[in-house]
Every structure is written in structure tokens, then in C-alpha cells.
Length: 456
Image (cartoon, rainbow, N blue to C red):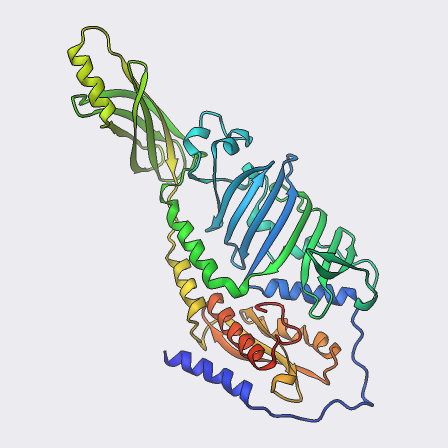
């Protein structure tokens, strides 16, 4: 709590000092000329600085499938949202650098690489899915450090005022052609990225996609809710399947079949390279009719370790079948059809819950590696001199901030400086502190700082 007060006090001193200096001389050197390349470069800086970004659009996967996505991706690579493959929907989650999908039977029947016999078992359950299965590596494609490399370089060097204007979802934007597609930037500074249309992406599967067309929205202000949603979804993964880890099935037998229940015992071996839990799901029939189902789990089994799973049916239908078999002479066959499939080792959602708390109640930490900075006119520290607030990680924060000073000067300020406001221990706290500064500025001035894209 003491550190929190120290951090907030530092912010207050910066905002309330109100020192002013001389305004730029009318006879001084003119501000540097900004062209579309500069506007694109600054929009990329802002994109990379965001704590989370929402993407809505479509692409063509390497196999020719049309994939639509509405996903929110954090700076660390977590993702949550929905997608569809050739019109068939699925929920999507990326956590711990692993992709999970939850979809209906039709989705799995139509997705190449999934056997038809597997589809009924995994339908409507979370499934660990390698990126090559979907044909799209969501984390890699939407990594804001590498995504801009796909944008190409703008064609021509006009001033933003001379660039063609159009509308995207009702918003007026600058249409900036590049050597790999078209970027759409906000008309007014800071010219944030609104949409990108690209002809192609990476060079290897599962990033070798094409026809990327996505709108882009900063989602940093919603990080508390985002991390809560990520934690809630992650908690659902305790029963998620891993159909791509091998489980060899051996002999089976029925046992303890009586008036109230009957069990099937299935011998199993883990043929994978990691310890696994195994789920067995069986559908039972008696006298030609379905009389119930059962599920069982066993493990973890170490690589090459053998074990067995016992799945017990105790349904009213079994009781009725058994009693009838005891009272009516003749043959009364019964049986079970089952699947045995590996379960994932579920990730722990605790860290995501902690980040949600940090985004709601940020705490400053002078020893932290997440830096909140302000870029302002060197003439003073009051609102009219502030250009933007930013967040950056590690010792490189000052270089990232200083690289933006030329854009600050081009906005008409006499000279610009970057200063650290606070440090924190995690990105959620850092962006929450920056949001407090932006919200306070907006409360006083009625709008965000003039170059603010993240958190505005």
C-alpha cells in the first residue's frame, strides 16, 4: 500500500506542477514535415505499446479455408474470442502459448486432420489444437511485435492531408497503399491503425496465410475484464481433450454386473512423450437399445506406462434391463462402445486472476520493469504541454519513448522530452496507471492527450 501511494504521488506531482516556459519563437525553425511513412511508423509504435488489441476480420488459411475471427489478443499472447472455418463456428482460447477450440460436431467432422470417429467425443468440449490443424497460428500472426513486418512500406511520401480518404465502418480514414496491401489510419493525429488489408502473411505454415483483412481496435482500457474472462475460460480446461496425444487401447472386460450397475474395464497405455490423464467415455446398449453412458478418468500415466480405466453404468435403464433379463427366459445381450482419449494438463488460471486484480487496483513498484512515461513539450508540465502517455517494458523504454520525440515536435511543440512517471511489476498495473492518467487528463480537458491511441 505504501508503494502505491508513492507511485500515485509521483503522478500527482507531475500533473500539478504547472510550470510553464516560453512558447516557441515564431522565428524559430519550422517543425519537421510529417509524411505518410511517419504516420504509419507512429501508428505501429502505438500498436506495439497496447496492452491488448481486438481484431475482427478474415483470412484464407494455407489449405484454402476461409477463417473469420473476432479475437482479443494481449501483449503476452493470450487470446480469447470466436472464429469460424468455412462458416462453422468455434470458441477460441490461447493461453500458455497453446490453442484451444470448442465447437460442435459439424466443425470437427469438416476440419481436416480430425478422424470422424473422434469428432463425436470432442464435440462441444474444449480441445487442445495444434496451430497446423487450424492452419492459423493466432498468437504468432497477431503478435504486435511481428505483425507490422507484414504491413510492408507505404508507397509514396505525401503529407497525411494529401492522402486519399475513405470510410471504414463509418469512420473516415486515410487509405495508405503499401507494397503488401493497404493500411487504413485515423484521419487525425495520432493516425492510429484502423484496419489492414494484406495479400499474404508468413512464409511457413501455420502463418502462411493470405488475404488478411482485419479491423483493429485498442482494447487496453478493458484489460481487467479481459483477464477475468481469460481466467474463467482457462478454469474450464480441466476436462479439455488432447486428441493428438496417443493412447493405445488393449483388452477390455465387464465386471461387477448386477442389479444396480455394470462396469467395463479398459486397458490403456500412454504412447506419448509426456505424462497424461486419460478419459474413457462409453455408450451402453441392452437388447438393442441405448441404456445409458458413463465416463471415467485415470492417470496421470507416464510415457509408455500401462494402466486401466473402469467406467461404471448405474442408470435406471440398466436396472430395468437387468430385471427383465432375470425374469424373462432367453438371450439378453448387452455391450458398450467406448473411446479413450488423452486429457490435457490444465493450465493454472491463478496468474490471469492476479493480472485482473492488478488492472483493477494497480500498485506502483519502483523496482518493476514496466515503465509508464509521459511525452510533453519541454516548456512545461501542465495539460497544454502533454502530448501522450505510454507504457514500455524493460530498460529499452527510454529509447522507445525518445524515438517518438520527432513526432511530438512535428505537432507544433517547441521541443519535446520523455519522462518516467511510474514503474510497476506487471503490464496490467502499468496500463491501469497510464489509464488513470489519461482519464484524469480527459476529465480536465474533455478529450484525451492529442497523440493518445492506447487507452483512449
